[in-house]
Length: 348
Figure 1: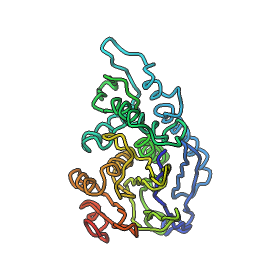
Figure 2 (figure 1 turned 90 degrees about the vertical axis):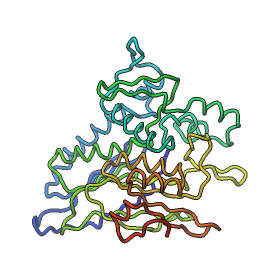
Figure 3 (figure 1 turned 90 degrees about the horizontal axis):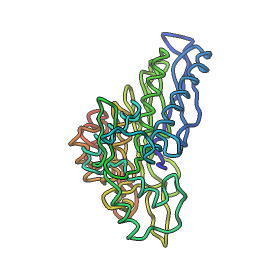
Protein backbone atom coordinates (compact mmCIF):
# COMPACT_ATOMS: atom_id res chain seq x y z
CA UNK A 1 0.00 0.00 0.00
CA UNK A 2 1.31 3.40 -0.86
CA UNK A 3 1.84 5.87 1.96
CA UNK A 4 0.98 9.45 1.02
CA UNK A 5 3.21 12.13 2.46
CA UNK A 6 1.21 15.34 2.20
CA UNK A 7 0.50 16.99 5.50
CA UNK A 8 -2.40 19.43 5.18
CA UNK A 9 -3.31 22.37 7.35
CA UNK A 10 -6.57 24.25 7.29
CA UNK A 11 -6.09 27.26 9.61
CA UNK A 12 -9.74 27.08 10.63
CA UNK A 13 -11.60 30.38 10.96
CA UNK A 14 -15.24 30.90 11.86
CA UNK A 15 -16.03 34.43 10.72
CA UNK A 16 -16.85 35.48 7.20
CA UNK A 17 -17.21 39.03 5.95
CA UNK A 18 -19.97 38.23 3.43
CA UNK A 19 -21.75 35.68 5.59
CA UNK A 20 -21.29 36.09 9.36
CA UNK A 21 -22.69 32.61 9.98
CA UNK A 22 -20.26 30.80 7.70
CA UNK A 23 -17.83 28.36 9.22
CA UNK A 24 -15.79 25.37 8.16
CA UNK A 25 -17.87 22.21 8.43
CA UNK A 26 -16.32 18.75 8.25
CA UNK A 27 -17.13 15.10 7.66
CA UNK A 28 -14.80 12.10 7.58
CA UNK A 29 -14.78 8.34 7.35
CA UNK A 30 -12.84 5.34 6.09
CA UNK A 31 -12.36 4.18 2.50
CA UNK A 32 -9.80 2.41 0.29
CA UNK A 33 -7.82 1.18 3.29
CA UNK A 34 -7.36 4.75 4.53
CA UNK A 35 -9.50 7.75 5.52
CA UNK A 36 -11.31 10.56 3.77
CA UNK A 37 -11.90 14.10 5.01
CA UNK A 38 -14.14 16.74 3.50
CA UNK A 39 -14.08 20.34 4.77
CA UNK A 40 -16.29 23.08 3.35
CA UNK A 41 -17.48 26.59 4.02
CA UNK A 42 -21.14 26.74 5.00
CA UNK A 43 -23.66 27.81 7.59
CA UNK A 44 -26.01 24.80 7.60
CA UNK A 45 -24.83 22.05 9.95
CA UNK A 46 -27.84 19.98 8.86
CA UNK A 47 -26.14 19.62 5.46
CA UNK A 48 -23.57 17.26 6.98
CA UNK A 49 -25.74 14.16 7.02
CA UNK A 50 -26.93 14.48 3.41
CA UNK A 51 -23.42 15.22 2.14
CA UNK A 52 -21.86 12.31 4.04
CA UNK A 53 -24.51 9.96 2.66
CA UNK A 54 -23.81 11.11 -0.91
CA UNK A 55 -20.02 10.93 -0.44
CA UNK A 56 -20.06 7.44 1.04
CA UNK A 57 -22.41 6.11 -1.63
CA UNK A 58 -20.00 7.33 -4.30
CA UNK A 59 -16.99 5.85 -2.50
CA UNK A 60 -18.72 2.47 -2.19
CA UNK A 61 -19.37 2.47 -5.94
CA UNK A 62 -15.75 3.36 -6.69
CA UNK A 63 -14.48 0.56 -4.45
CA UNK A 64 -16.85 -1.95 -6.04
CA UNK A 65 -15.42 -0.95 -9.40
CA UNK A 66 -11.65 -0.95 -8.82
CA UNK A 67 -10.59 -2.35 -5.46
CA UNK A 68 -7.98 -5.13 -5.56
CA UNK A 69 -8.82 -6.01 -1.94
CA UNK A 70 -12.39 -6.99 -2.87
CA UNK A 71 -12.35 -10.28 -4.78
CA UNK A 72 -15.75 -9.46 -6.25
CA UNK A 73 -14.98 -5.94 -7.47
CA UNK A 74 -15.22 -5.27 -11.18
CA UNK A 75 -11.44 -4.99 -11.47
CA UNK A 76 -10.84 -8.19 -9.50
CA UNK A 77 -13.26 -10.06 -11.76
CA UNK A 78 -11.45 -8.64 -14.79
CA UNK A 79 -8.12 -9.80 -13.36
CA UNK A 80 -9.58 -13.26 -12.78
CA UNK A 81 -10.91 -13.37 -16.35
CA UNK A 82 -14.45 -13.79 -15.00
CA UNK A 83 -16.17 -11.01 -16.97
CA UNK A 84 -18.07 -11.89 -20.13
CA UNK A 85 -16.23 -11.42 -23.44
CA UNK A 86 -17.59 -10.96 -26.92
CA UNK A 87 -16.42 -13.02 -29.87
CA UNK A 88 -13.37 -10.77 -30.33
CA UNK A 89 -12.30 -10.87 -26.68
CA UNK A 90 -13.63 -7.45 -25.67
CA UNK A 91 -15.02 -6.97 -22.17
CA UNK A 92 -17.53 -4.20 -21.45
CA UNK A 93 -16.59 -2.22 -18.33
CA UNK A 94 -18.14 0.58 -16.30
CA UNK A 95 -17.58 4.21 -17.15
CA UNK A 96 -15.55 4.59 -13.94
CA UNK A 97 -13.18 1.73 -14.75
CA UNK A 98 -12.81 2.80 -18.37
CA UNK A 99 -11.93 6.36 -17.32
CA UNK A 100 -9.28 5.33 -14.80
CA UNK A 101 -7.79 2.76 -17.18
CA UNK A 102 -7.62 5.44 -19.86
CA UNK A 103 -5.88 7.87 -17.50
CA UNK A 104 -3.42 5.13 -16.52
CA UNK A 105 -2.58 4.24 -20.11
CA UNK A 106 -2.07 7.92 -20.94
CA UNK A 107 0.50 8.32 -18.15
CA UNK A 108 2.12 4.98 -19.03
CA UNK A 109 2.63 6.20 -22.59
CA UNK A 110 3.80 9.71 -21.64
CA UNK A 111 6.20 8.38 -18.99
CA UNK A 112 7.55 5.77 -21.41
CA UNK A 113 6.67 2.93 -19.06
CA UNK A 114 7.67 4.37 -15.69
CA UNK A 115 4.00 4.21 -14.66
CA UNK A 116 2.49 0.77 -15.27
CA UNK A 117 -0.73 -0.51 -13.67
CA UNK A 118 0.24 -4.10 -14.52
CA UNK A 119 3.15 -4.01 -12.03
CA UNK A 120 0.92 -5.70 -9.42
CA UNK A 121 2.52 -9.17 -9.61
CA UNK A 122 5.88 -7.64 -8.74
CA UNK A 123 4.38 -5.50 -5.96
CA UNK A 124 2.80 -8.64 -4.49
CA UNK A 125 6.03 -10.62 -4.92
CA UNK A 126 7.91 -8.03 -2.87
CA UNK A 127 5.19 -8.10 -0.18
CA UNK A 128 3.61 -4.67 -0.72
CA UNK A 129 0.25 -5.68 -2.19
CA UNK A 130 -2.94 -7.24 -0.80
CA UNK A 131 -1.05 -10.46 -0.11
CA UNK A 132 1.09 -11.08 2.97
CA UNK A 133 4.34 -9.27 3.70
CA UNK A 134 7.56 -11.11 2.94
CA UNK A 135 10.57 -11.56 5.20
CA UNK A 136 13.10 -12.07 2.42
CA UNK A 137 13.68 -10.50 -0.98
CA UNK A 138 12.56 -12.69 -3.93
CA UNK A 139 14.92 -14.85 -5.92
CA UNK A 140 16.18 -13.59 -9.29
CA UNK A 141 14.24 -16.30 -11.15
CA UNK A 142 11.02 -15.30 -9.38
CA UNK A 143 11.51 -11.68 -10.40
CA UNK A 144 12.21 -12.64 -14.02
CA UNK A 145 9.08 -14.79 -14.07
CA UNK A 146 6.88 -11.94 -12.83
CA UNK A 147 8.52 -9.46 -15.21
CA UNK A 148 7.22 -11.56 -18.10
CA UNK A 149 3.68 -10.71 -16.92
CA UNK A 150 4.20 -6.94 -16.88
CA UNK A 151 3.24 -4.58 -19.68
CA UNK A 152 0.42 -2.10 -20.22
CA UNK A 153 1.04 -2.54 -23.94
CA UNK A 154 -1.05 -5.71 -23.58
CA UNK A 155 -4.13 -3.68 -22.63
CA UNK A 156 -6.38 -2.33 -25.38
CA UNK A 157 -9.00 0.20 -24.37
CA UNK A 158 -11.92 1.28 -26.55
CA UNK A 159 -12.88 4.49 -24.76
CA UNK A 160 -15.86 5.25 -26.97
CA UNK A 161 -17.55 1.92 -26.34
CA UNK A 162 -16.19 1.50 -22.79
CA UNK A 163 -14.61 -1.87 -23.36
CA UNK A 164 -11.22 -3.44 -22.75
CA UNK A 165 -9.30 -6.29 -24.31
CA UNK A 166 -6.32 -7.82 -22.54
CA UNK A 167 -4.07 -9.74 -24.88
CA UNK A 168 -2.00 -11.50 -22.23
CA UNK A 169 -2.66 -12.67 -18.70
CA UNK A 170 -2.37 -9.48 -16.62
CA UNK A 171 -3.03 -8.33 -13.09
CA UNK A 172 -4.15 -4.70 -13.18
CA UNK A 173 -3.74 -2.64 -9.99
CA UNK A 174 -5.07 0.92 -10.01
CA UNK A 175 -4.04 1.84 -6.47
CA UNK A 176 -1.50 4.40 -7.72
CA UNK A 177 -4.22 6.45 -9.40
CA UNK A 178 -7.59 5.49 -7.88
CA UNK A 179 -7.35 7.56 -4.68
CA UNK A 180 -6.51 10.73 -6.58
CA UNK A 181 -9.27 10.07 -9.08
CA UNK A 182 -11.71 9.41 -6.23
CA UNK A 183 -10.82 12.81 -4.74
CA UNK A 184 -11.98 14.46 -7.97
CA UNK A 185 -15.16 12.40 -7.96
CA UNK A 186 -15.96 13.37 -4.37
CA UNK A 187 -15.25 17.01 -5.23
CA UNK A 188 -17.90 16.69 -7.93
CA UNK A 189 -20.35 15.25 -5.37
CA UNK A 190 -19.62 18.21 -3.09
CA UNK A 191 -20.24 20.71 -5.87
CA UNK A 192 -23.51 18.97 -6.75
CA UNK A 193 -24.63 19.93 -3.23
CA UNK A 194 -24.08 23.60 -4.13
CA UNK A 195 -20.79 23.87 -2.24
CA UNK A 196 -18.05 25.76 -4.08
CA UNK A 197 -15.48 26.37 -1.32
CA UNK A 198 -14.12 23.08 0.01
CA UNK A 199 -11.21 20.72 0.49
CA UNK A 200 -11.38 16.97 -0.16
CA UNK A 201 -8.66 14.59 1.01
CA UNK A 202 -8.31 10.80 0.66
CA UNK A 203 -5.18 9.17 2.03
CA UNK A 204 -3.16 12.35 1.56
CA UNK A 205 -4.34 13.19 -1.96
CA UNK A 206 -6.07 16.57 -1.89
CA UNK A 207 -8.22 18.88 -3.97
CA UNK A 208 -9.23 22.37 -2.85
CA UNK A 209 -11.56 24.93 -4.38
CA UNK A 210 -12.47 28.47 -3.45
CA UNK A 211 -11.48 30.14 -0.18
CA UNK A 212 -12.11 29.74 3.52
CA UNK A 213 -13.86 32.33 5.70
CA UNK A 214 -12.27 35.79 5.65
CA UNK A 215 -11.13 34.95 2.09
CA UNK A 216 -8.22 32.89 3.41
CA UNK A 217 -6.78 30.38 0.91
CA UNK A 218 -6.55 26.65 1.49
CA UNK A 219 -2.91 26.06 2.39
CA UNK A 220 -1.16 22.73 1.94
CA UNK A 221 2.09 21.85 3.67
CA UNK A 222 4.47 19.48 1.88
CA UNK A 223 6.22 17.22 4.36
CA UNK A 224 10.00 16.94 4.59
CA UNK A 225 11.20 13.37 5.32
CA UNK A 226 12.80 12.84 8.72
CA UNK A 227 15.13 10.01 9.66
CA UNK A 228 13.20 9.51 12.90
CA UNK A 229 9.93 9.43 10.88
CA UNK A 230 8.87 12.68 12.53
CA UNK A 231 7.37 15.54 10.56
CA UNK A 232 8.65 18.89 9.36
CA UNK A 233 7.49 21.17 6.58
CA UNK A 234 9.47 21.71 3.38
CA UNK A 235 7.05 24.10 1.69
CA UNK A 236 3.57 25.57 2.16
CA UNK A 237 1.55 26.34 -0.97
CA UNK A 238 -1.92 27.68 -1.70
CA UNK A 239 -4.40 25.57 -3.63
CA UNK A 240 -7.50 26.66 -5.55
CA UNK A 241 -9.13 24.54 -8.25
CA UNK A 242 -6.21 22.10 -8.33
CA UNK A 243 -5.36 18.66 -7.03
CA UNK A 244 -2.14 17.71 -5.27
CA UNK A 245 -0.56 14.31 -4.72
CA UNK A 246 2.67 13.22 -3.09
CA UNK A 247 4.47 9.92 -3.50
CA UNK A 248 7.38 8.96 -1.26
CA UNK A 249 9.73 6.03 -0.93
CA UNK A 250 10.96 6.33 2.64
CA UNK A 251 8.12 5.18 4.92
CA UNK A 252 6.91 1.93 3.38
CA UNK A 253 9.73 -0.60 3.08
CA UNK A 254 11.30 -3.69 4.57
CA UNK A 255 14.89 -4.37 5.51
CA UNK A 256 17.00 -7.46 5.00
CA UNK A 257 20.60 -7.72 6.19
CA UNK A 258 20.85 -3.95 6.47
CA UNK A 259 19.46 -3.30 2.97
CA UNK A 260 16.27 -1.26 2.71
CA UNK A 261 13.80 -2.23 -0.04
CA UNK A 262 11.30 0.46 -1.04
CA UNK A 263 7.65 -0.32 -1.78
CA UNK A 264 7.97 1.49 -5.13
CA UNK A 265 8.80 -1.12 -7.77
CA UNK A 266 10.36 -0.24 -11.12
CA UNK A 267 8.20 -2.08 -13.70
CA UNK A 268 11.16 -2.23 -16.10
CA UNK A 269 13.63 -3.94 -13.77
CA UNK A 270 11.36 -5.73 -11.32
CA UNK A 271 13.28 -4.32 -8.36
CA UNK A 272 12.50 -1.59 -5.82
CA UNK A 273 13.87 1.82 -6.75
CA UNK A 274 17.33 2.61 -5.37
CA UNK A 275 17.86 6.29 -6.18
CA UNK A 276 17.83 9.16 -3.68
CA UNK A 277 14.52 10.72 -4.71
CA UNK A 278 12.59 10.66 -1.44
CA UNK A 279 9.42 12.62 -2.20
CA UNK A 280 7.56 13.82 -5.30
CA UNK A 281 4.66 16.29 -5.19
CA UNK A 282 2.57 17.02 -8.27
CA UNK A 283 -0.01 19.80 -8.59
CA UNK A 284 -2.48 19.27 -11.46
CA UNK A 285 -6.06 20.22 -12.45
CA UNK A 286 -6.81 16.48 -12.13
CA UNK A 287 -5.94 14.91 -8.77
CA UNK A 288 -6.01 11.53 -10.49
CA UNK A 289 -3.34 12.66 -12.94
CA UNK A 290 -1.34 14.17 -10.09
CA UNK A 291 -1.51 10.82 -8.30
CA UNK A 292 -0.35 8.80 -11.31
CA UNK A 293 2.42 11.23 -12.26
CA UNK A 294 3.73 11.33 -8.69
CA UNK A 295 4.28 7.57 -8.91
CA UNK A 296 5.78 7.75 -12.42
CA UNK A 297 8.31 10.39 -11.40
CA UNK A 298 9.16 8.52 -8.20
CA UNK A 299 10.07 5.54 -10.36
CA UNK A 300 11.98 7.68 -12.85
CA UNK A 301 14.22 9.37 -10.29
CA UNK A 302 15.17 13.02 -9.98
CA UNK A 303 16.95 13.76 -13.25
CA UNK A 304 14.66 11.83 -15.55
CA UNK A 305 11.69 12.89 -13.43
CA UNK A 306 12.48 16.56 -14.01
CA UNK A 307 12.79 15.87 -17.72
CA UNK A 308 9.37 14.17 -17.75
CA UNK A 309 7.87 17.06 -15.80
CA UNK A 310 9.14 19.65 -18.24
CA UNK A 311 8.22 17.56 -21.31
CA UNK A 312 4.64 17.21 -20.06
CA UNK A 313 4.26 20.71 -18.53
CA UNK A 314 3.79 19.29 -15.05
CA UNK A 315 4.03 21.21 -11.79
CA UNK A 316 6.43 19.03 -9.79
CA UNK A 317 8.35 19.55 -6.55
CA UNK A 318 10.93 16.94 -5.48
CA UNK A 319 13.01 16.30 -2.38
CA UNK A 320 16.22 14.39 -3.11
CA UNK A 321 18.63 13.06 -0.50
CA UNK A 322 21.97 14.84 -0.49
CA UNK A 323 25.17 12.92 -0.99
CA UNK A 324 26.41 11.84 2.41
CA UNK A 325 22.88 11.39 3.73
CA UNK A 326 22.36 14.75 5.46
CA UNK A 327 19.38 16.81 4.32
CA UNK A 328 17.62 17.17 0.99
CA UNK A 329 17.97 19.08 -2.23
CA UNK A 330 14.78 20.68 -3.53
CA UNK A 331 14.03 20.36 -7.25
CA UNK A 332 11.16 22.22 -8.95
CA UNK A 333 9.93 22.01 -12.53
CA UNK A 334 9.32 25.07 -14.71
CA UNK A 335 5.53 24.80 -14.31
CA UNK A 336 5.79 24.52 -10.54
CA UNK A 337 7.80 27.74 -10.40
CA UNK A 338 5.20 29.49 -12.56
CA UNK A 339 2.52 28.57 -10.03
CA UNK A 340 4.68 29.20 -6.98
CA UNK A 341 7.36 31.78 -7.84
CA UNK A 342 8.73 31.70 -4.29
CA UNK A 343 10.41 28.42 -5.35
CA UNK A 344 13.43 28.48 -7.60
CA UNK A 345 13.52 26.31 -10.71
CA UNK A 346 15.84 23.30 -10.80
CA UNK A 347 17.98 22.04 -7.95
CA UNK A 348 18.20 24.17 -4.78
